Image (cartoon, rainbow, N blue to C red; front, side, top):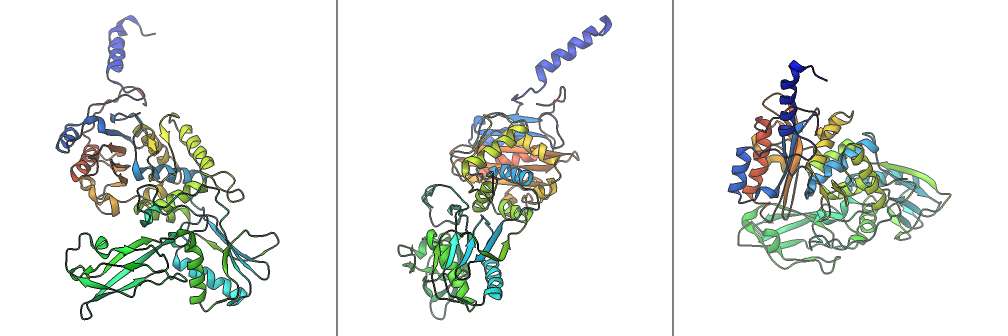
Length: 476
């Protein structure tokens, strides 16, 4: 109890705290630069969700609808990244064992999302060095490590040929996508078509005609017809002025992709199959031939976060399902693991709704306060450098190039969907301190250039120390 002479000062401090300090879910005024950016974008203030605080810990310096749920789009990958680094560790790798019973060869997928063409090629070479190039039996593909419901590739937005819509698969070759190349040959009036992924039984057109027109929507102008996935056709033309072009494309028959890619690669290496490529389970008593290993988790996270890869994020989420790899992974188990971890770090159970961990979902939600507190917690963990290095550098790399206010001084994960624009990460401020920043816009006008300027304004205010400073009484 303070003595009598100290009583006026004590009461003053108590009243000041009651009026101005930040309890949980308290809101601060928006910086004028942010209010102006919202006005220019014709966005209401309630479309903005933001939370900024010192990364080392402490109360929020900017909080706008801090405890309200908002759609984060691909910023949700930050939550998946942190959960994976904490639960799996930076040395985690996916294993792809190949075994034999003396006649058949078994490839057991365990969820490696980075089993790309060159790694498939290397693994099959190792297999042939042990078994020889002639396989007398079948090549059996075991996909039983996932126990998840089948979902149509275009279920999210009606775009089944977009690589970001490829669904998770325990055995995932090259993310079930091809990279088509178009190289104009003006002398012949055509562009030569190439594919980076040979697929058994699939024949792409050798050329497409060159034509007139602009290049803004050259893919639509080619008029791809994939009704017959084994004989895709182009009914249109490629504008001659476009030059060389590449088209990442999810294969139209994803269920057959693994078998087609593995068979084509086996034959390209000089192998022969006297049986067939089919799906099945690895029986007991087989002998291990070789085991493929994915890159370590930090390398995979860099691919995922810098390029916002949804396939990797969903596979990483499923790797959190309890009992992996002995028990089939399922979404329910993975979600429960993430929820438990998030709640253990101070988020309430109503501050996170997680679906597949990638942000490619209309169900996923998180509060800015929850994500910000997770970033503060991540800063204390030994794997913090691995997380930070996986995020794009503001103003320089991939999706963070459009955040010029802190170019070279922030690591930020961005997110964008219809009606959603978001970013979150760590900003190095002009005051010499680092700040956790989370900002999300949920509004039909959220994806325009003016809306992106709102995100940049929040980050710029953070770096320039424009956020409201309180500093009275403990953490929010």
